[in-house]
Length: 340
Image 1 (cartoon, helix red, strand yellow):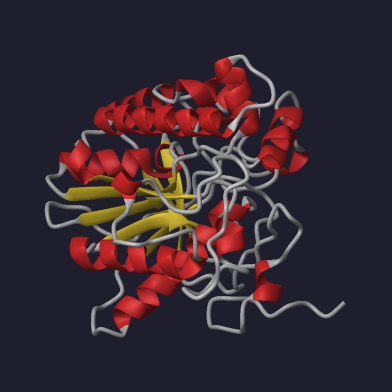
Image 2 (image 1 turned 45 degrees about the vertical axis):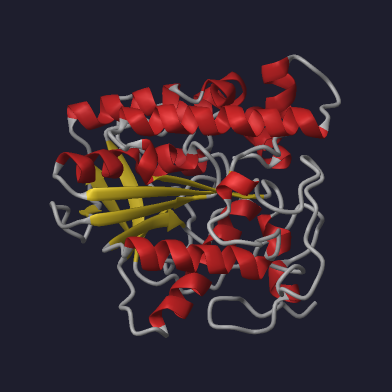
């Protein structure tokens, strides 16, 4: 979660309770998740930034590990493009590229600690190192291997750090994001994937969905079946900041969420799973400094997932005002541009 505009909105609404959120509070009629978890489960969690995996699926991760299954966590970015976070954590103004890079190393360290609380070892963690705050542009204007690479306005990088490149020669281009996800999927061979929903309002998040679907399409052309996907939601208005956001309460879907975008299901967490999720979130000290109340609102007695193929295709608005749907050619998992 590194988009500055979203963080400012979250902070602005943190002290208030929306009527929409209240209308769903306390719902207990959600069906359980429709996939079985056992020792044969191979869960691949794909998160836009360090902390999204814990916010959306820490309990699920813990459940798979406890039953003897395997988990691999992949972070699209290292969360290094978060100006408010850098300024708060380092006590500075006007951060330089070196400050952002150092901040990314810190967030990776926190991610390793958080994963350890869930029982996931370092060998099962992968940082792809793509640009925080730049995934939307990679999904729009930086699509082919023949164009120049995107340059992060935060870190000044045009490629992932050398130690985080799954494939040789990858740069900040959309095609390289897809290629690296393809390699991860084919090498790990997941039986279940957990990733963000395309209706998530953060541009890095909905763009992550686009890249995951593109990679899965390519993998399926090789004759490999697509595993079921559990979609988690992180950013949607002021959700889940409600009055009953305590550890003993249940997380309910946001009101006014489009009803055709999948079936809401719930994973009821056991006491130790709730505790593990909370401990994992507490490892993200740099994020708690800025958005702590928002993060801890996810530490409830359940986790929510949307199952089924979303009806609406992703339409992401980049921080520069560009709409991915207006830049990409028509494809199965992209909306056509609206006529204005």
